[in-house]
Image (cartoon, rainbow, N blue to C red; front, side, top):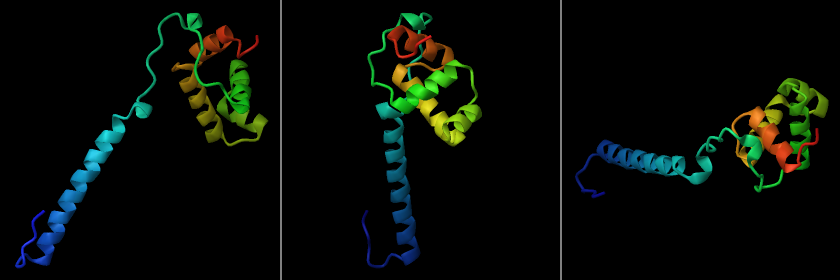
Amino acid sequence: MKLHAGTPRRSLHAKFNRVGRQCSRRQTRAKSHHPSRRPPAPVAAGASDRVFSGEPLTRREQEVLTLLAQRLTAAEIAERLVLSENTVKRHRTNIYQKLGVNRLRDALAVAQAAGILKQ
């Protein structure tokens, strides 16, 4: 940006603010295209045929998955494990992401096929 000696102060602030907004838009655009921010790919029809080879589930995620398999709600799981409901929802999201699925039915099928979840 070129600054001139006779430019009023208000004009300088306006130029600076325009440049700042453009930078933040570029940064925002770059962040939204980052691979870690993309939603997981949709799962094919045979979710139980998938082989889990991703990041292992933590002990707490395994506990949450076991309780989800019993069809408990997030509030009920939170009460049993003495957690907040939002923490349980975050664990559920992490489980889905690690297993590469988008819904509970697929998560349970993949976990059973991988031997993570015992019947």
